Length: 517
Image 1 (cartoon, one colour):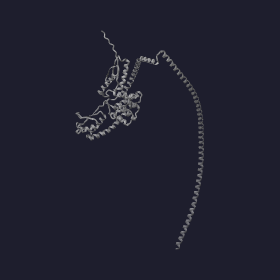
Image 2 (tube, one colour):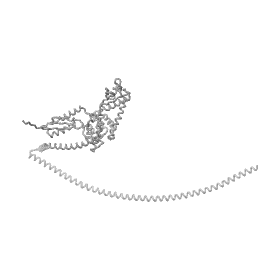
Image 3 (cartoon, one colour):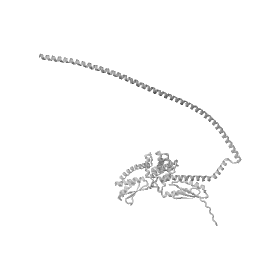
Image 4 (cartoon, one colour):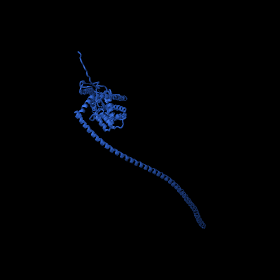
């Protein structure tokens, strides 16, 4: 028992001694660590002080350099300011000197103006005196001659007019012939070269279209029960269907090429489809009409692309496309317009005019024909309204208005459009003219020739290309013959519409006859 107690006491004593030793060792260690920390803090403080000193030195050096640079800039700016001030002072001195010179000049001009006013006044007084003297002298002369000034003037003018009338007309005729010769040569050269450079085949449009049928049975299907299909087709499309004994073919007749083309495509579609009844006919016709609007726009775009024309309103392009389905005397209106545009452009290039404007005016000169069956008025008036609506150039508007002579041409391009229009229409085979129009034109030409005083007979020859006028020699002299030819030319140009040109020949012949017995 005692041994156990002793052992426990020994253990307690040992633990106590161990704790004392542990605390002693820990104290020693903490003292060492504290010393190290103090040393590290001191070293850091010394290093920071050193870096501070180095930074202060760098800052001082930088501030010194910056100060030197600033001083140099300030010095330079001061020098520039001094130089600018010197220039300004010099400029002010120059302005002062100029102002002094201007003042002196004004004084000299004022003095001259005063002198001129005095001289002008003296001249006016002298003129009044001269007029009074001339009046007095004229009155004295009239008293002496017993003849007034007005009567003498009229007598002299009548005598001079009588003596020089023939010479003046001959001189004018000679110069006009020379000018015509030169102008004709130049114009012929330009026109021939333009026509040679632009050449296109002529295709005369017809008023009928023929559709081939797969068999004769299809004719009966197109006619329908009691003719209801053919009546529907004619009512919807506005054309006439001619179904005769011609095998496997029907004919569409209409003077409106657009309607005829829509009807042709509609019937061909119905034939391919095989379903032919009133409802299907109306359905196909509506679809073809919509597709035709797209095709018209494509045709218009293709025309302006070929001519190199840009910036045109879509509505105007659509109207140009409609010209493809319009004819004049069998001539396709769009092809005619393109031909006029090309000819006018070539001639404008030769004359140094604006080629683009000339082509634009040529293409649009007959634009009124696209809707002349929808709007009242001539195609010229309609075309002018359309051009104004889409803000076309004044030259283009005047070209449209004057290409048939309804309005005076006020530009070279307008004259070129008139010439190109005449060339395109007058080309052999370009247009088909009816015999009725032909006879009417010849009759009107002879009536104009016979309407002049002193004319004995007038004959239209060479298919209306020339009129020969025979005058009465005892009433009309050579000078008056030339005057009649000129006046007849102006009257024909103002009152008639005709392709190409008309030559006027006035014949005056005096025959002296005797009979020997």
